[in-house]
Length: 100
Length: 190
Length: 345
Image (tube, rainbow over all chains, first blue to last red; front, side, top):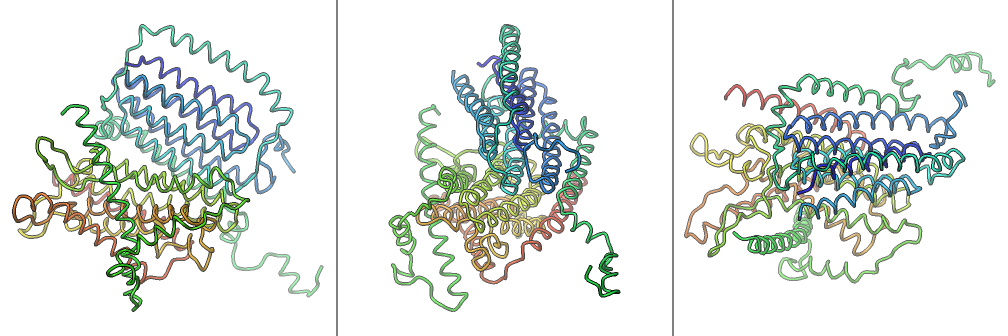
């Protein structure tokens, strides 16, 4: 029998790695992937609590989180492609002027 | 006992993948480690009895969203990351700060070990029937709203990622723009 | 039954099924060569064994002994991993496919299926989704513009047609009321109107069957949707830089995918192992498996027949067809099926 807090600690570690990736990395696509990692950590929390209280609503909420993550990934990557076409770089430190 | 071993095994793969995402310099290696994290998370969901959510995690997250990321990285092909001054500062301050915060949160959670229940293996109780009953009755409005959200995201992605000339060609008439009409009329080159 | 008996039976089943699958993959190559040859008014393999039946063995030996070149300009970890990923995912999906009913040998009995999951159909769809990575990573790691272009086209095509593939199966799931493959086949037993079997293709899912068929051709990158590996266009697409055993693994993965798709079509639309059963009891135990294999063989024959009859689509026609025609049709089929089932209950 695995105590619930072990799952929560794992979810916390994933979330923390996502936050670190968001702060440290300079490539915009890797930053987006860190956001996906954070969302996955949160999903694990939801499912773990759903298992503890035997309430299926936790799992239903995971669907909505996945849908929102998918929509955000699609639009975000489209924006990245549009920015790359004009600025020729994926480094966030170099996208710091409004006009080229 | 078996439950603990499986949890630790897949949990170790998750954490290794997440740390590898931070450590790798080329985004494609980060993307591959994120795929590994998502697949092992699907196994963790199975350990928690959520079979439908595990299947959807593999199909949607690991099988579609990460393919999108991979295709974008292969299309843009920007190469390895460079270490700028900003990233060095962020690493120096960020890693210890976030690590301290994480240790505090984990200590609080594990300190409450006695009050949280245990989760048992094999009791697969997240059947598609029950989830569908919830999703299409109690949560019908959020379901419909998310479908509209996806529609908006599709339209937005198609518009944002297409080339400006392609949109211009679709919108404008077949008449040539003003400049070339003048050139044709006067016959001059400049 | 005890845990050790369960493990031993499972191991025997897994080894047997994977062995049969790999042999079936080799002989589907033989089938393709013979059928394509007869369509083109020539003989095909005839020299190695009677009717060329030992040709797959000769091909296997050739692939093993061929020189395995690894170019210096490829990204080695992914170059070696990509065919392995393709083959592993292609073979794994056979683990939830049922071949027949309950059989009993002495004191032990088992279903003719490696494992029966509640969500068996979703497992197959998930593994198909993961199979895209073999293609995408092989193109990227080859460090070659034809490979990259072919890989991106192939992965975009596979992801697009996965949607209509899954949606065409939702109608069947609504009619059967379960995602478990065994229960879906059990719901197709019996006859209606006294002689038409209650298979889903006759019982209301005809449009879904054709949507599934077309999506399956596009999903496995077969003609008329095989532009990503068209020889005249892209050299060999995403497996340009591969030779010998790694190319053989891609080849095996393609035919194993075809077999999985054919098995799934048999289970969903053609009634699985249902068919006329007669004769002594030992024959009655084997007949369901025979009917299953016959239906899968018919589906594979259809695959090869279509390949050597139709020209290929251009890539933009292909993508437009998938998103603008198949997807609305699949959704319309779901709405119609749901209406009929709800009004009948």
